[in-house]
Length: 79
Image (cartoon, rainbow, N blue to C red; front, side):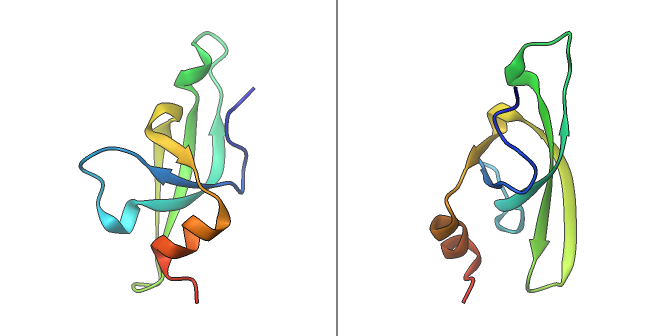
């Protein structure tokens, strides 16, 4: 069973994450029946409010963490 579901807000983890791709929303789940669960891949939509552009990228489960709505808005200034 995947850790995240479509619609979840996530944050990328790691030292070299650009600010415009730090917070996003899960838009796709790619399951691999022959691989361990932690290698599940997720398509994440990083919508840039400043550029009105969308950046969709694929990440492994270990590269993401779930964010609660308040934390998500702090990172994006959702006022």
